[in-house]
Length: 66
Image 1 (cartoon, rainbow, N blue to C red):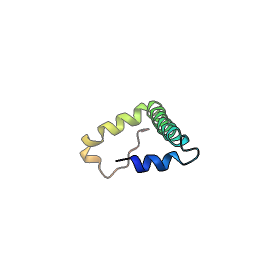
Image 2: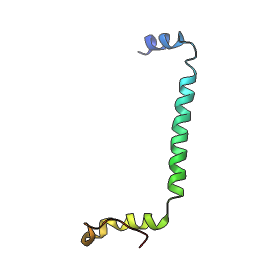
Image 3: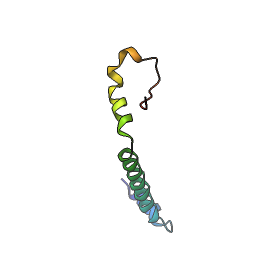
Image 4: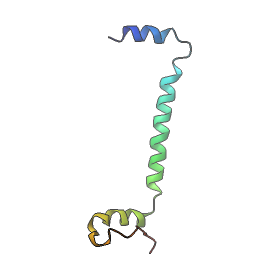
């Protein structure tokens, strides 16, 4: 099934760098996402977790610093 594609890819010079770049982009994205989540303020996460329970405050903006 992939024989025509495999043959075309083998004829391209330097094609081996694309899987490496794809893996690097994937790894860096999820590493950055993990760092972002780990450094997020716990007060903001607590405010987000209580949002579905605060039915009376739907029209007020979220301000966890108050």
